[in-house]
Length: 96
Image (tube, rainbow, N blue to C red; front, side, top):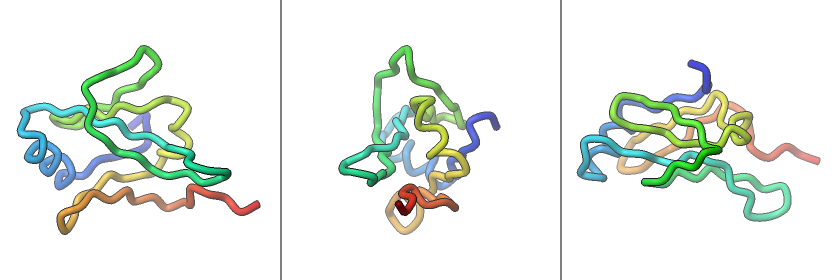
């Protein structure tokens, strides 16, 4: 897949059940709360900007900004034990 990230069946099902809709859009992005900190952010959305890219998996559209892609690469959005998890093999924050 060209975006290099994925969403599991469990996460897809949980999003659809939680939203109560047949289709759902989520925004997947990187936030920078302070200094060299970076965090994943996953929220429901109903807006798409002209700068956004879209990855569709079943009934879920994952909206992301192309500049975040280097940090989203190789991630998996998963759902287990009542919560969403972003599984990523590389740290978001690199040591100085």
